Length: 121
Image (cartoon, rainbow, N blue to C red; front, side):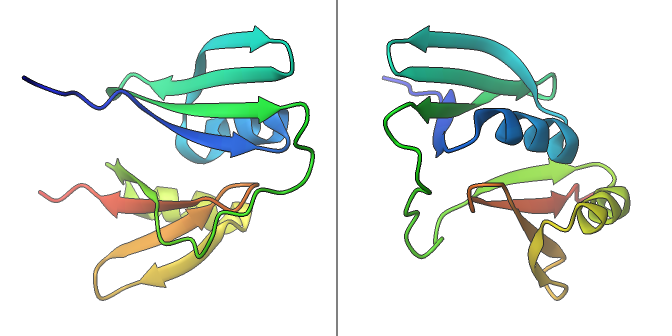
């Protein structure tokens, strides 16, 4: 039996703001969308991997989500760490840096943490 990871879900308060953030910060694009009574689900992806980020907006949940102590995150490798860092610094979304490990974290509009890792050669 084999398993393959296909997506991770984040519930969001402002779907349009989240889509804009993921497009600008990480180059993700909307791959597809599901709309139903009281919800919209948008799958974000890029050509680098077949893994998707699922953004879920619920009509009956207009308040911020309680994401606990932020002890979880989704990680992204980049081929241009310096350019990515400069973009994220300009966007004001860097929340933690660990120069000793050579990584940093950004946060999306809902407070989810995203780790940025350089490609190791």
